[in-house]
Length: 102
Image (cartoon, rainbow, N blue to C red):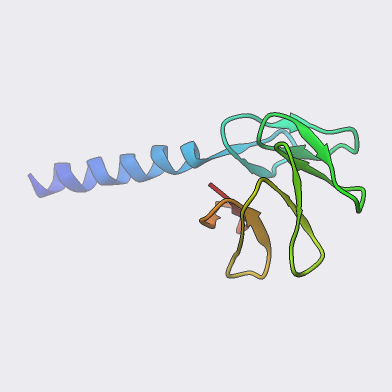
């Protein structure tokens, strides 16, 4: 029975982790289940591209300025272990080593 439990947990981890973020055509990950191509060629999650004051694009309705000068979409942002900021309340590590928000 333990062999089946281990196999089930492995399958769950392999297939459940990608559900937290979307792999985009350029190889980047975004929060949510869709990749939105912005005019500058980058992809964002959150349904629409919002132009930030620094010329970058963020996903969502509003660009929020972070303490490091970067912008994220949404009302809340979170500092991740690598020093980057993501929108939302949690940092989720992706297979490529980057973080996405929730």
